[in-house]
Amino acid sequence: MTFLPQWRWRGADSGAAKSIPPSGRGYSQLDWLQRSRQLAVRPSSALREIGWEEVRRHRSAGDAWTVVCGRVYDLTPYLQYHPGGVEVLLREAVGGDATAGVERTHPWVNVELILRPCLLGTVRGE
Ligand code: HEM
Image (tube, rainbow, N blue to C red; front, side, top):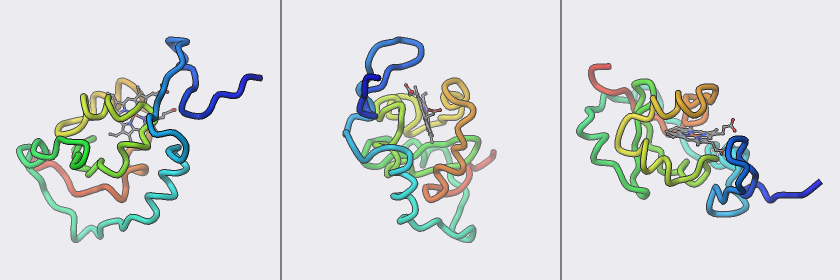
């Protein structure tokens, strides 16, 4: 059996070796679980309604908000742990609505659970 380090496995569709996540060891979903436990989950009293114009202002790798199913998340700490890589999130999630992308690529992923410490509130009007 050929051993592939976890950031260079073969994609089921392409067969080509991928180089994601980009940062090497220490960025698996289990590492995120460990990291996320160090982040405080906001109490429900701290959650708020957030407008789209505010979401759109947080659109960089250092300040990355997104919306999935009407919930607003600060994705910044999760970016480097995303198994699909950082770039796709910056392109299709950050500063906007990631719901369609999640549904298209991995509808089975429990975003609500994974991003629990990242939850900021809900989108106004949804
Ligand atoms: C914003 C919240 C998101 C979370 C929490 C998340 C989480 C995850 C997780 C856990 C996986 C591994 C799934 C598995 O192996 O079964 C994954 C893979 C992937 N994600 Fe996401 N994702 C998010 C958004 C997105 C978006 C918006 C896109 C693209 C539009 C995307 C593209 C991908 C791709 C392409 C993979 C597959 C990587 C591979 O195996 O080659 N993700 N994501």
